[in-house]
Amino acid sequence: MFKRLRPFLALGLVLSVFFLGGCSNSYVIFDPKGPVAAQQKDLILYSIGLMAIILVVVYVLFTVILVKYRENRKDLSNYDPHNHGSKKLETIWTIIPIIIIIALAIPTVKVIYDLEKSTDTSSKPKAPLVINATAVDWKWIFSYPKQGIETVNYINIPKDRPVLFKLTSADSMSSFWVPQLGGQKYAMSGMETELYLQADELGTFEGRNSNFNGEGFTHQTFNVHSVSQADFDKWTADMKSKSPKLTKEQYDKLMLQGHVKKTMTFSSTHLKWVNHAHEADYAVKTRERLGVVPQNPHGSKAKDANKPESDSKGDS
Image (cartoon, rainbow, N blue to C red; front, side):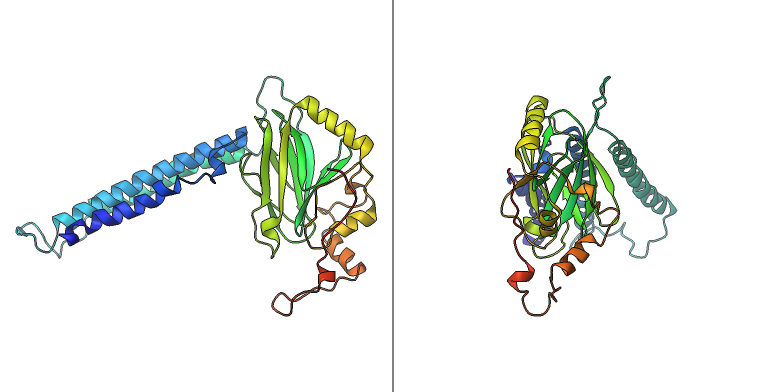
């Protein structure tokens, strides 16, 4: 009796993984707050649905074969163990995978190309807000070149306005990801990548580095605050008049590996003297100049002096 139920129990176990997984509230990618994330959510659900259909067909055929050709079956007159070489069946199971690949590829490629441009498709599109995002082990530095403002580990963006992120890294490769606003994109030293995002709702959304690049990467997070255009303009004016200017000495301290104790805001940007997309070795040279000795991760623990927590004056 148990042998007969074994295929169904196996199928139930597999399906329970998917159903119980839905009980968690951590799948923020299924709670999009912008047009980019919404398109990607639709693509994910489409892919899951197509793959679920394939799984159902496979398990149904698997169950039919087990029952129809079970060992203790009484009538074996139509069973030929030496039967092989059906051109009809071979053609069918060659064509079906090709159809599946095409069905997955066409919408995927379309979404990828659509998201490489501004998300504002209105009759009077708004000019995107440009933010330079620089990854440093293990923190995020954001520069608003037009507004002349720089922040650490947080950004403010206007609701319903596309944002063009220009991504780079001061040292190891990182991955910029705000799950509720869109997919991830890599940030690498010596080059610049671009990512369009947009928030359709007010709120605070968590961003992070989704690429493992050392012991501190799990805490390399930041917050994205979506505010009204009026509040954004007010914040810009306040930070420009009240926050201290960023000095080269303060910025060099941010090049040291470690986490910052708090968010920071400055009324000038580091783009005046360095752009890591063009100067890939700036952070390495800065650490050498400050006397930081690279440590072997497989050897003894690094001294605290080599992994200080960056500290600068700034207002959040």
